[in-house]
Length: 513
Image 1 (spheres, rainbow, N blue to C red):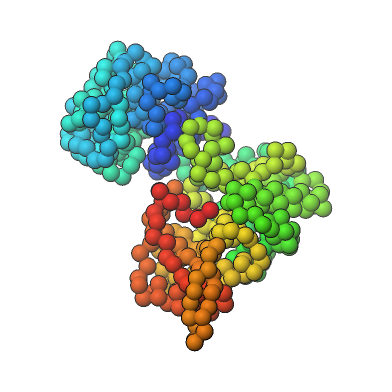
Image 2: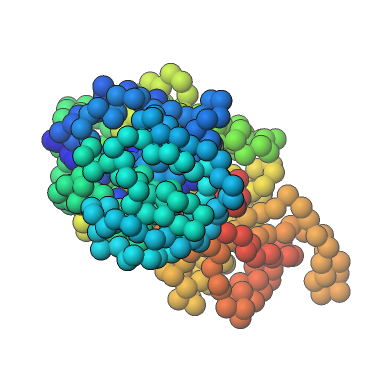
């Protein structure tokens, strides 16, 4: 089935995911690719437009990311953003030079030509700039279509070839007319039908899974979280009981997770579910390991080993399904090989051994978290499942800083339980994107009764977000924070101090490891 799409070429911008989200919100599918992707892979019937992202490099710097010059000969509209605009200029014969004054933050944009890209954009509006270079001379065939106080060519266009460039970032919320600009490029210039929806995604994906799997069997690790749950129901819709869902108790799960998963998925959804207790194996392999990346790799390898054993007992299994999401790929450099920095290796991406005995099926790998929930609603899944906060693949191992032991897992389970239950009692849980507790590798002095204590410090974290790519700490009322702290300290043996994390993402990540 042919699906129209917009390609986003990753030149290292921290805002790539925001570009993708803005395009997706227009009901148009998009994909992020590295600059060195094969141009032969482009199907002109599918690719309706190309967006060059921004990036931290200068186009004249040694090793600065480039793209295939043949992209300009495909007859496909191109929009360059910041570095992308400068690259278009350099590659087509223009001139880029350092600005006398760098331009960062809000800047007044003055539109000089409202044709196509700036249709319905006010003559003057606020844009978000972030650049030290600028286009000094435009390539042949281009004209200026916008300027700012510090940048005489803030946007340019070659209307004959449908090539456009903007020196600012239309994808960020600070750019007032950003959504209109992206809409104009996607719909007016690229002429996308805008018929991509979660309903069409389900139809396409179910068909693809059926044709891929055939008469074989698929196993899927079901944790009870949103991602694996939606993946399970989606694949089950495609192949029924040829999907064998395996719940692995790795000893790193939340309190009563095993009971909940069995109750919901075996009884309510009637899935073909097997339960495996491998907690001792995981905890043994993690003994003495404190480095976060090593934890993730160990858990990933152990996870696959357990699945491999289970697959052999099932027979005729050729596929392993995972609930990998697009942010997992974007944040794991190995996914694109592009210049974006590696933040962390995700369990579903970087923990896999080089020689897998099972082929991968990742039906959600091009979706953001909010899109996954929309898929779940289309599949008639209950809010009890879809509304659950995200839980990392490595589980409590990356929420326990330092050595991971059963005793420390048990303490953190109880802390997390008091935190989450209090949020639910106060009707705050559904207003928060993600909330969890972290056990720190330090102890502090306290007093309980008339006795001195020397016990663990726990941190609690709650953030608001749309998809987890950016996040801000949640404003929990002081009286609720007091209840949370009192419950944890009074009810959980081994903790005598609670701290609240008030860091945003960026610069911090949501999880601590």
